[in-house]
Image (cartoon, rainbow, N blue to C red):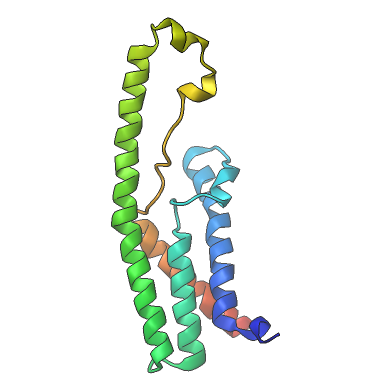
Length: 157
């Protein structure tokens, strides 16, 4: 039952859920459309990965101190995770956009073929996931979300 008193773990989990949930109203403000699929998708504002790892690091810092080896591990884990979100994963998302455009152009070319007309609509529109990574601003605000949420949890609980 010690897991229930593990503050850094709970702070990180709460940060993930909070960041995923807040994507819906932020997207609504930007587009005037409610998209509930954002609750379980990757990418978007704020980065739930960044929120989680910064919440974890902040929780460890509050529990163990900034001079603890555990904080060093958590901080480096956060840095690597956030760097990856803006690097490799972001580039994979950019490539997915280009590939989806190529598929779309190819599909327009094939539209005239008789066999194409007989295929179900779902087969015609297979797309790769484009929101894999994050823009640096999304990672930044995800990180701030994790830090401030953890500080609030620490002082109010």
